[in-house]
Image 1 (cartoon, rainbow, N blue to C red):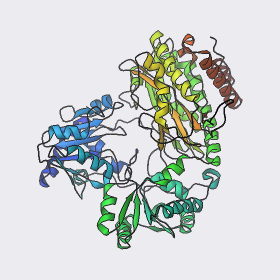
Image 2 (image 1 turned 60 degrees about the horizontal axis):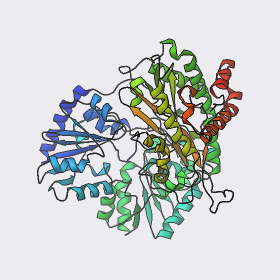
Image 3 (image 1 turned 30 degrees about the vertical axis):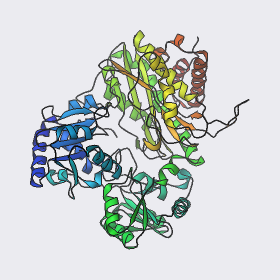
Length: 607
């Protein structure tokens, strides 16, 4: 199994570890210390050696932070994780604070004593975050203080070693564009902007630029490393050489010099000695980089990492790969849904059994490299937890007349997939069907959207919510996130959300996944991936409009739909989508009973 069902959290360890951290704080005359979920690369997924927040609190979610004072400690999480954080941490040691309702800076200003010194590791925070927090604390007397040594690392005696996963080449048949072309374009961008160099700190930027993939993280094929790209000449890649075989070295040697991570400080100091103007992304690079460069004499120029936008706009080869990966993945998902239809009411299935079955179907494709994240296999009340992860302790059976949600994805060399389906186990009930249909209306609204050049994700996000809002309902996560090309399942800068300020451009892949969650009862989410299309003229229109191409193919449960709530346009979309699912999937389903199920599951919905 690629997915583990162990529960790594143990709330009972929190008090002891908190006491150790407080001793380390006192020894350094600190009144507090901030422990983020982030690592030195500001990534969503971090290696075991960087799971500092989990080690301290027991919380295993992908976003959060903890502030520890001498007498109080608070674990800050967003609405996706409040219940999980409460279950995984010791309630006597950590109070759970939901963001953005209460910001970390506001809590510190209200709780810490005036003049308190709050330590932090500058390698784990961006300049933007530190400066924003300092500004928010400016009238409180509370001060942030950079600490060279990470205090969690000081007291974490059995901390795992950093990962040593091998690096592989990502061939042109998948990447579409050779590395030296990407590098030339990046260097031209730097030269035009007057930058002498850029420091790349995001592993996905480096993977995309060099056409390599790594294996340092679960589910995400990154090689943890840093790179310096000058406006002209050879690049420098700071990575443990043991990760590179001869084939990788031969390709990299043509464009870059490989140096050890220990040489990074010297590389930054060399830029300072040359009085270089160095681009640094203040939203993703750590404050340590900005401070080290400035102290060495470099001029730090704060601008976005250009690789992020270039990587987000998939080329033709990457888009063809994504389409192929999704059609392949659709076989596994449809086989799973057919099996659930036949066995769901047996009373024998539980969340782990479904997760295991789906992974087996994906393995049957023969091309699965990894999952793209822990499968969210959520029965009944667990479906109301948007980021639920099943373990042996939490595992629930699928109960008759209930709702089951499964959100999953696979990593294939030609693409990364992510799909969510919510299904009825028997009769889900009138309320659940009505709210499912409202969610579906939002998903269809996004799917049908046409929009002019310059439209941002925040402009389209309300389309997914309109039907829910009209019923006095909503959901507390974004409608969609970017997807990588055999990279991270969550990729920026594009998103469909209230915070989605990036312009949507052709070739971007985005998830379309509105939801609804009734705590303690059930949850609903429907997710397809879509590609932003080129702008085309609409008959009698005045401006060309972009749209979305749906690349996910699996039935949407007709047993969860109140057909009378759909408009004729919405029914037409659903029926056309299901017809496309039959066309793409049915010929490749190996079992006759699965093909028969698909025929029923995609039958036209009548008004």
